[in-house]
Length: 79
Image (cartoon, rainbow, N blue to C red; front, side, top):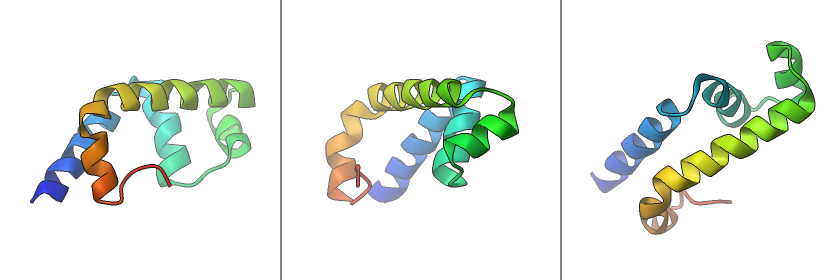
């Protein structure tokens, strides 16, 4: 039950990202695309992709910080 609640919190955090950050995050983390592939697909520079990923990760960290210990216990933390 707790794992499902944590998964929901992660989903909510991803959905709460601004559109550009969410799009790049999903392409990167869920679809496994490279910076170059994302840049080409989105018509932006590789540096813009990198900055957007960094911003998205910072926003997710801030939103999920209260749950990080629990996430690590369930093996969902940084690998």
